[in-house]
Image (tube, rainbow, N blue to C red; front, side, top):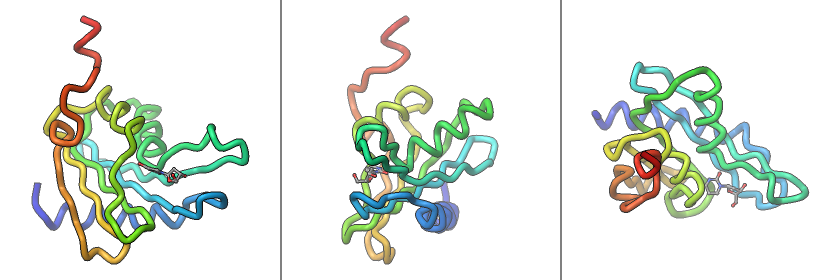
Length: 135
Ligand code: THU
């Protein structure tokens, strides 16, 4: 995937971050998920006073796409709020494991874009449990 495409995806993640509902942590996250057929689904984190119902930006994007019947994904961009790039939490990686191949690309950057990390799902979650294990 070309860097320009990843940069565009990061920009859409940054826009998605504006939709974040994070009154408790104040840590706003945005994600932009690229499907294999070129569609893009944006997501943000949505928190809750009861804390545990909180959903991450990545899963919001995935679940919107899954609802629409999409099952094939190429890449996801994530932007958080810290000085460091925002790596996906374990639960989100597990959701990626359900629907994505090992070459699925995860790109993340800090808010000002000075640090960008791009890795595959294989790199970010080796030896993961997934649908193949239940065959
Ligand atoms: N969060 C995400 O949206 N994505 C992640 O991968 C890590 C954490 C959110 C959840 C919560 O609203 C806030 O960041 C602080 O944990």
